[in-house]
Length: 224
Image 1 (cartoon, rainbow, N blue to C red):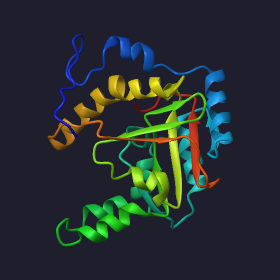
Image 2 (cartoon, rainbow, N blue to C red; image 1 turned 120 degrees about the vertical axis):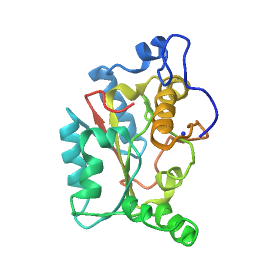
Image 3 (spheres, helix red, strand yellow; image 1 turned 180 degrees about the vertical axis):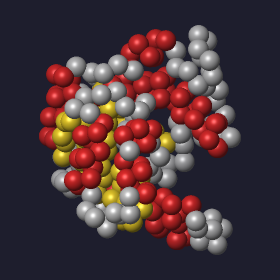
Image 4 (cartoon, helix red, strand yellow; image 1 turned 60 degrees about the vertical axis):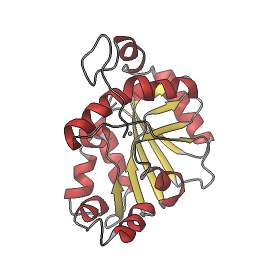
């Protein structure tokens, strides 16, 4: 998510969502809502499974990724929190693209970098919201990761904390702007020295290539 919009709220500090947004969007969904979202995701062409914890989600990702696979892991607090980012980048079991891209020259190798990032064999990431009827919402400042999620990557694995389930698309968009963006803006300012922004939003309603996308729903609040 890069724009010049301030992330401060009237009642919280910079980078804090409002108390109302926290009350609405930070809490774990009920078992019934998690199960309903998983069922609708499956109906919409997304392979879905529900696990009890971040540790189980980590194991599930490992079980899907073949040893030696080329993998791009999107920047994600969820993946960092449960250890998946470390597994991909540091275990030695995969071909991680993110460290490779960091080592390339942005001016001399720009075209090669675009090609590597656009069509990896596997992408692992998360979402900002999932609706009860099985739509996935992902916001981005640059938009670079959205193309691979939509169609470029061979396979996509999304790990989703159970607090991200919302009733509908309108509520999902509000979750992005009111809850996720303030925290992501703070993270971007601290990590990169620049503001973030809701510049691009991908909504996946239906997956035509069944089996290409897997959603792992977790019965825990993970990430934001």
